[in-house]
Structure formats: structure tokens, C-alpha cells
Length: 61
Image (cartoon, rainbow, N blue to C red):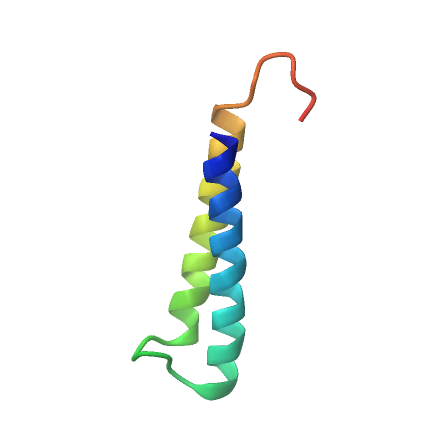
């Protein structure tokens, strides 16, 4: 499950970059920067939830 969490973090980073670019340029594909920012937050929260729920027993990480 850590692979999915890492994928979500990578997607969150990508959507954050798109949100920053969208803040400077306006809408991207008709979607405002705030929507990308919300997507970034939701992906990061999903990654945190996956790590917290599926952490291995006895693991310090």
C-alpha cells in the first residue's frame, strides 16, 4: 500500500505545480487554480490516511 501512497504524493505535487501555474496564467482547460489546489490537498490527505491505516506492525515509519 505504500506504493499507492507514494503515487498520491506524486500526483499531489503535480497538481500543486499546476495550481501555481494556473494562478499566474488563469484557467487551465477551463479549470481554475483553486480546483487544482483542492485536488492537491485531497490527494495529500488520502496519502496520509493510507499510511496511517495500513502501516506495518513493528515498523518505526
